[in-house]
Length: 251
Image (tube, rainbow, N blue to C red; front, side, top):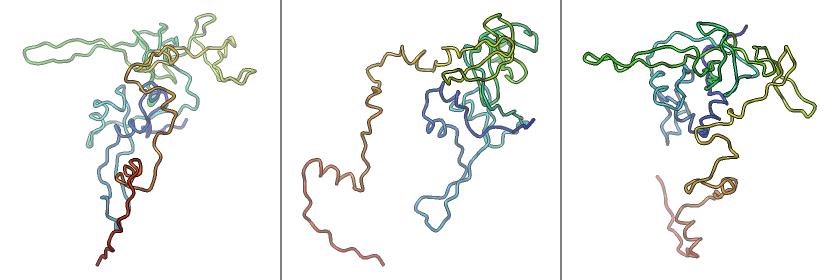
C-alpha cells in the first residue's frame, strides 16, 4: 500500500462545494516567503513558498486553516492513502465500523477529500470545552469527529439497508455508477451532493438582483488590445491624435 504525506492541492469535491473560483482558493492558501522583485531582469524568476499543507476539518480558504499552517508550526506527519475513484458523497447513508457507534447508520453531512474523511451527522461525536477562563467554567460543545472512508465507514445497500462494498461499473448507456458487490444493486449519487453554500440544487436557484446572468457570463466582454487606456477612450470618442511626439534618447 502506497502512502503519501500531506496533499498539495484541494480536492475537487471541496472546491465544488465552496463554489469559489480556483484562483481564489489558491490565493487564500498561498504563503509566499520570498519572490523575485518586479522590474529586476538581472535576477532569475524565483518564488519561495509553502507547497505542502496539513488539511483539517477547517476549509483551505478560511482563517483557521491559515492559522493551523503558520510557519514554524510543528505537527506530526500524516500519511494519506491515495484513492483512485472517490465513492462517498454528501447525502450517502453509511454504516460506522469502529468506535462506540459501531453498527449504527447515518447520513454523510460533509466530505473532506484531502484527508479521506467523511463526517456522519450525529455519529462519532466528542465533547470539547471552549471559552474556559478563570471566572467562567466554559461551554461544552458536542461535534462530530471525522471517519476514514478506507476502513471506518461503509456504504449502505438501499435494497436491504446492510453495509456493503461497492465498485464502479458502466451501464449500457455508458454511465458510470456505483454497484453493490453483494446484491448488484446500483447505489445512486444523492441529490444532496449538488448542494453548495449558495444553493440546494442548480435547477431551483433563483437569480437575484445583483447576480450576473448565466448568458452574460458565457460572453467575452473584454477584448485585449495593445493600447493604453487613453488610446481606448479616444477611439470610442472618435478623437484622432495628429500630434507627433519628439524623439527620446536614453543614455
